[in-house]
Image 1: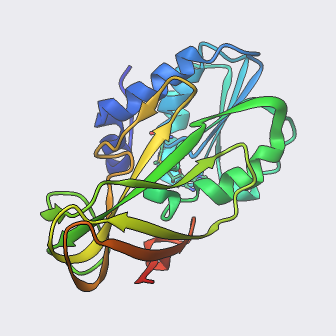
Image 2: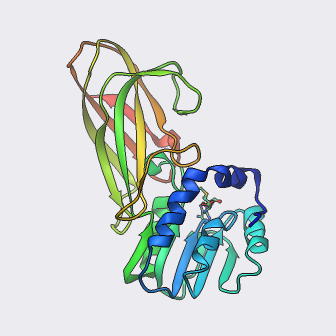
Length: 255
Ligand SMILES: C[S@@+](CC[C@H](N)C(=O)[O-])C[C@H]1O[C@@H](n2cnc3c(N)ncnc32)[C@H](O)[C@@H]1O
């Protein structure tokens, strides 16, 4: 099927690894099949995947152009209703069996996955599911060339520690968007460190975990003050951010 899209949603569609994990998770979903919500439906591609499994799909997208594309793309699918609006203002009238919400970004800082799901999951049946199910965040010490927060896209950096898991967020839980963690990282070489690399893994369901892809959570590089380290030093770092408030909300400091 050929999709009408905006340039941004076209890049999302071109990322075949991102699409294939969502496709697989939706194929593996085999509970009740009455109603699904597709929150932030973009071009409508995930509603298209859902359309053969559900009696009714309500797809919500706040970007006017993208929702117009989704309406056109899904016009022949009588079981999909596309709504142009903000999920946070939408008055849900029924509880769904499944919520699909791909407003993901690294550590969930920049996009609205957490505020949207905190609101929308009141409209999920008690035994309902969410795709993706969970995310896992890791951090590594690095030496960065650039001294501002940036994505891992065509940039150089050197890694100074193994990754440690510092948070795991299950979307069925009530999530406090105000996040703070104290990290303890062990250096595996001597030299100058000046940053953290944050990587997010996405658990789509019990069987599928996706690593970063170009359009699904490319790692985030966050500066720290310069620090000379030896091999096997323990470096303690505090990281704070507000999920959904943008990467400007990220603060890091040595403890
Ligand atoms: C990463 S894109 C995913 C699009 C599509 N689901 C896909 O997988 O190709 C996230 C989408 O969520 C939309 N979005 C973000 N916050 C929203 C909100 N509060 N209400 C409705 N849509 C929202 C964005 O406009 C964007 O189109």
